Image (tube, rainbow, N blue to C red; front, side):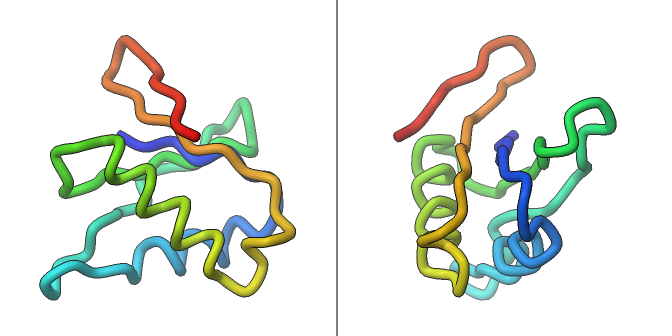
Length: 86
């Protein structure tokens, strides 16, 4: 599971991330928004490598219309451990 921390343009980012495809398959699916922490967005991915998934998501955001001005962070979560990616 991939968690995106971003407080602004959330609907826009969800749509940009969900429409990304590899070999005609959608790579990310939005799961939920944390009800206690409104900046936390959860995504599932078809990719086995969470590092690769985080890198792809980061590039999707950075290449979007607002990517260069948004403050965001992306982590992977396996149910027990959070892994931060830069």
